[in-house]
Amino acid sequence: MYTNLGGIEFTRKDKVAVTLGGFLGAADREDVSGNFRGVELGLSAPIGLVNTSVACLFGKIDDGSYRKCGIEGGIDFREESSLPITLTFSIEERYFDFGNGGPVSDPRDAYIFITGVEIHLEKLHLSPEG
Image (cartoon, rainbow, N blue to C red; front, side, top):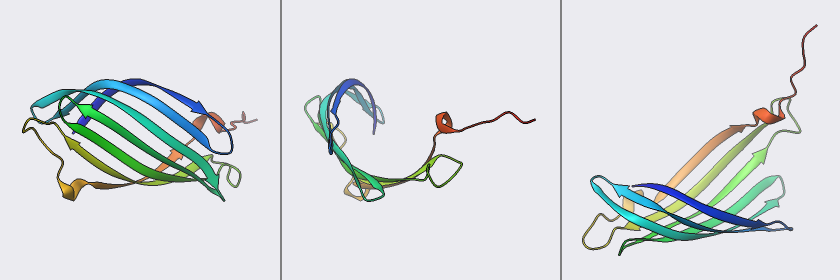
């Protein structure tokens, strides 16, 4: 299933950052599509060296429903290395139902593991040679 969304998010930063967002758009699966509307709530805070966040997006696809909840961690190596990178890892639980007998997510695809490497090019300190 694919979603094409636009929306707005508001974040309040304190010891724990809180994000609230609203989204509108379209959801597609094979040759079925529907209108999507949803809200997201997220919390993020550093726990030791790991920047941790938890977020859930709840939505409606026409008469059906959508849910994506996940937890993500990132370890920032910008201080220890000349190459500013962050290693990320997350697990997400996803469910969708287009309603009215349309496609429904397969339980075998409910959990998704994601790993990544972010290279922060804006933080590179390039100095001219010579």
